[in-house]
Image (cartoon, rainbow over all chains, first blue to last red; front, side):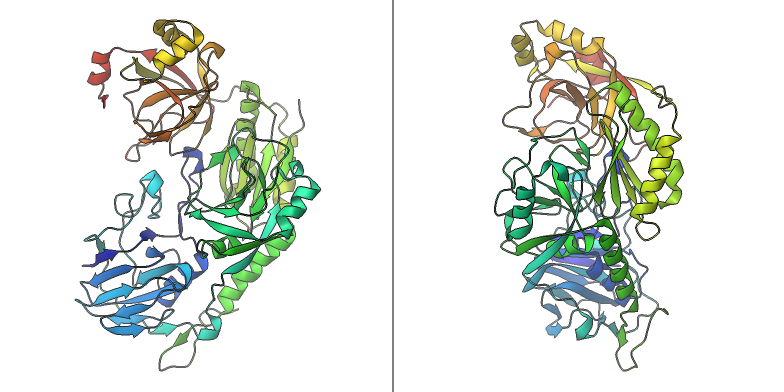
Amino acid sequence: MSLKVVQAGILSLLQDGGRIGQHRIGLTTGGPLDPEAFSWCNRLLQNAPGTTVIEASFGGLQLEAQIDTYICVTGARMPLRIGKAAKDLWRVHPVKSGEIIALDFAQEGCRSYLGVAGGFSIAPSFGSTATVVREQLGGLNGDKLYIDNQLPCSTPAQCRPLYLADEHQPSYHNAITIRVILGYQQAHFSRLQQRRFFNHTYTVSDRCDRMGYRLEGPAVACEIEGILSEGICYGAIQIPADGQPIVLLNDRQTIGGYPKIGSALSIDAARLAQLQPGGKVQFSAINQFAAHNALHLAASFHRRTPVAEDTAEPVRETGE
Amino acid sequence: MLEPILHSAGENALILYLGEQTSPEVSGRVQAAAVAIEAALGDQLIDLVPSYASLLIIYDAMATDHLSVSTRIRQAMKSLTTLSTDQQTNTVVLPVYYAPESGEDLTAIASRANITIEEVIELHTALEYRVYAIGFAPGFAYLGEVDPRIAAPRLSTPRAKVPRGAVAIADRQTAVYPAVSPGGWNLIGRCPLRMFNPERDPTMPVTVGDRVRFEAIDKQRYLALGGELS
C-alpha cells in the first residue's frame, strides 16, 4: 500500500529530521530545509516528530493514493487539490484510494511538506531517511522522486481532523532579515567590510539549492583568501574571493576552505530556504546569548501554539 | 606550544584551533582534543568535525549553552597535559594500479617534475601518509603530505566525472575518490578497494589520524581485486 508518484515536480525529496552525528565520515545532515513547517506537518497528522514526509520544492507534485488515508500539507503556499476539490494547507484531509493529490506551483515561499498519517515507511541509512542526492543516501535509492515511484505507507488506525488556525500560520515574505552570529574568520573582515555586509540588501541568485544559497550584492572583501579546510556548521556564511556571500544549508559540505564571517541563526536560515531567486536578504548581527534566547523562544512559541480540531473545541496539545 | 584558540562558529557550534599549519603534531593535538571534548560534553555533544588544525564542536542548544560549553572545553584543554600524537591508530595499505590508462594525469605529473612515471610511482608509494580530515564527500579522506616533487595544483577546469577509486593529488595532499563525483585533483591511478561502503561496518577502512601506505599492483591484480577500467 502506497502513494504513487504521478508527476514528480521540480524537486521532491523524502526527508525526516536529518542525519545527525555522521560528520566524521563526511556525511552531511540533509533533512527539511524548513524544520518549522516540517514539524507542523507531523504534529497535525499526529505523527511522531521527525516522521518521514515529502519536501516539495517549487511544487508540481502529483500523487495517486492507493490506500485510504489522511494527508496534510504545510509550508509554502502551493495550491492543493484532492480529486477536483481545492483544499486548505495546514489541515488534515482524508483521501480515498484512487484519488489524485496535486500540489501546484508555489505562490509564496518555496518548500512545502506533504505528509501522510503514520508516515512513509522508508528504510533508514545511517539512522535517517533524509535524501541527500549528492551523497546518494536516504529516500528511495538515495535519489529524488520520479514518476511511478511507490511511497509505502500503511492504513492509519485513526487521525483526528486537526488544523492550524490562519493566525498561527507563518507567512513567507519575499524579503527577510537574517540574524548572524559573528564568528569563524570574522576578525579578518575589516570594520568597513562588516558595515558593508550588514548595511546592504542582498538578492538571492539563481544558484540556490539545498547545499547553500548564493547571494548577490555589494562585494565583501576578506583580508585572507583561503584557510586550511575546517568544519562548516549549519548556516555558516562563506565569503569566496568574489565577495558574494553563500549561506550554507542542510546539504552543505562538512569541511571547506573559504573564509566565513559567521553563521545565520537557524530559524532565519530556514526562512532563507523559503525564498526563490530574486528574494531580498538583509543581515543583522547578534551575539551568542541573543541567539540562544531566540532559539528557546521559538521552541516555546511552537510548543504553545494550539492546534484546532474540526467540529470540536480547539485543543491545547501540550501543557506548559 | 601554541595556546588553543576558541571561536564562535554558530548558534550551537564552536571552533577550536590547535595550530596554524598542517603537521602530524598539530593533527595529533586535534585528535587528543576530540577525545577529551567528547568526554567532557557527553550527550550534549551532537557532532565533531576534526580537520587539519581545527575541531568544530556542535552541541545541543536545547540542553546547554555557549558559556557552559566553552568553559568545559577550556577546562578539558587545560587538563590535557600531554597532547600526545601517539593515539591508537591503524596503518592501512591500499593497493593502486598506477598507469596512464588508470591515471590520466600521471604522464603530466612526471613531465612536470622531469622524472619518469616509474619514479612518480616510487615517490607516491615511498611515504606513509596521515589521514588529516574526512569531508567533501562521504568517505573522502584527505591524506598528507606527498613528496613536493609530485605535488601538483588542482586542474583549472575540474573534471565533470572522476571514477570511483581514482587516486589523486592536489598540492601536497593525496586521496582516493570514494564515489563517482566531479573533481579537480590530478589522477594518477585507481584503487580497487571501496573507501566508503554503507553496507559494511565499519563504513570506511580509515579514520582521522590513521596512517595510509599505497602499494603498486599490476593491471591483472587490480582486475582480480574487483577493479574496473572505464
